[in-house]
Amino acid sequence: MKGTKKIIAFALVCALIAVVLTACNTETTDKTALQAAITSAETIKATADYGDYTKPSRTAFESALDNAKAANSKADAKQSEIDAAKNTLIAAQNNLTIIPEDKTALASAISDAQAIIDDANYTTDYSELARGAFELVLAASTEVYENENATQPQIDGAASALLAAITLLTENG
Image 1: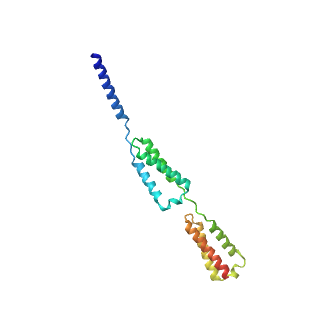
Image 2: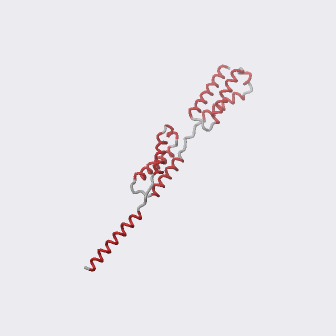
Image 3: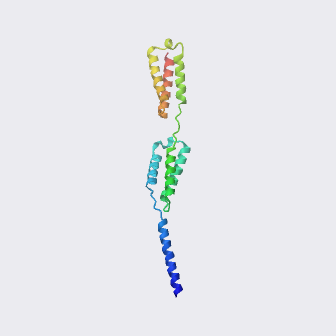
């Protein structure tokens, strides 16, 4: 019996040590920052402008968002995993790249308009009023062309207006 009591006592001590070690290894996790990053990302994805980003940057962003959601819903996720998911999502969000605006047609119209102005007969071929109106449209179109924040509709509108001004000027002499 004496040996049995020692074995039982030893087993109890081992069980107690296991409980203490388990309690010490339990890591508390904070998912607050990850949830905030997910909320921000979902807001961006829901905007009408989301399609203005390049497909590769959207794909990376969506993958990071999916991974962040998975880490957020994982009950036994470690803090390092949560932090990594948050950081990856934020980086992907910061790397969303806007599709560059196409100013090719506007540049061509500006070049055509400038060629008309540079013609030696410009002042004699067209009235002062026609030249003034034409040059105003050219100046406005050039301003749009030089604006780094111009949207594609603004660019297209400026190109159309300038092409119409060129047509009016040359047809009505």
